[in-house]
Length: 124
Image (cartoon, rainbow, N blue to C red; front, side, top):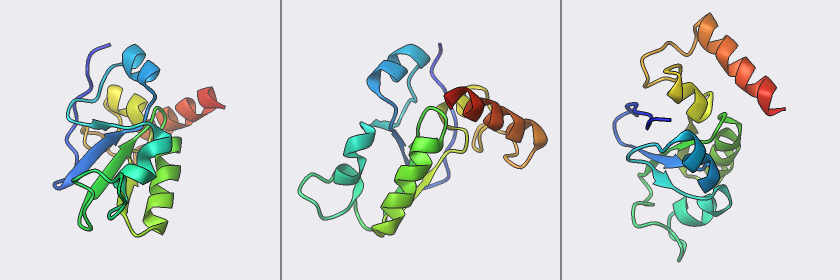
């Protein structure tokens, strides 16, 4: 599979929380910080000894997982800790198909919702 290209909102730092095996199989997300999902809080919350240098109070993180569910859950936990975090609806799969915001498709469209539902059904 070829690398996926999309444009995040200005100021967002993209974090790919997929496991390395998924990145090897499905492709990389150029420009994204690759972090294991279990390490995200330790690396993105400002002020911790393990925080990334970019993990300041104004950092805006955009998390990407395979289908979006893992990234959404992590983003919620980060927001509970005062971190600015969001996730890509439909995850990497939606980006790969050009269905996610930033890839040029309306996330409110019926085709987008159907694709996300299909991804979710396959993950169950």
